[in-house]
Length: 373
Image (cartoon, rainbow, N blue to C red):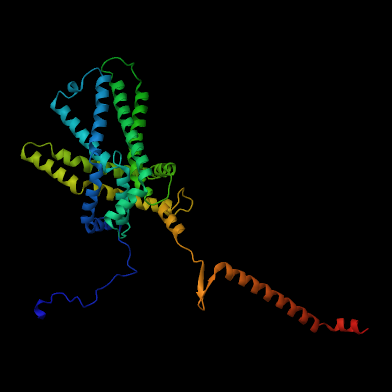
């Protein structure tokens, strides 16, 4: 039957070369992404279930800010969206905000994203994981800190949306109710708000991988995330712009009519349900992990603690031996220590006595002469 033996499984394979050079990060990213594709789909569903409302909360926040702009401008929302182009731009902006603020954890449910972040980090480090048990475990251990981050990011995003709407209404001054603002002041306001928005997205990329790696406080978490965001400002900005383009591309393709629009809409929904959040989450984690490793794990002066609480608790709960059996008799450690102490004292006394005898036995000639006289 050798005719059907295409592969000989009894023959040893080539194995792994311990001296093989690591592949470039770009190549390794695609290798891991393809190898973990089914686990990423499962992770995507574990993310979506607790975050069903996240896109709608983001869209509601955007609509509130847009309504504020309309009221400060002295018009209604329907007046601003009277033209087809205005309605199209409004839809695109709302959908882009909903997707970006969900896949980048702005309005996402923090504890669930912490569980996913642990899985993404393990994929990046090529470590084995148990999907459901590790996901739920990290959700529980990071519940309190994850909720704090959720409220912080959501409130910050909502305030920034309102600020953008208010400053835009003041600058446009459609109603004539506001004084004319000098160009330099308006430019500074816009620059500060844009910087704050970009910083919020950058910080959110670093927060959750650090949360599941270090035993870190709320203050340390945001402090370190801000430092890393500024230290890697240009690469972070490039990564963020790439994700904006990737999120906007399906919406741009949906601008056709009829079957073409229906096709791209269906494909966008399909991708979001099966891979989009996991793809963005894994990509962000793969990107930020080398920076976290360089500046926090390999840096002994970093403001963090690498040991998680569950590891410390495990060490505390490890039982310590109180004694041992010897010749059929249980000997306590205290009893053994006392016996050792007594034995040491006896040995010390014998050594001192032997030293005194030796000293008396071996005396010098000068001492002998003195004694003899």
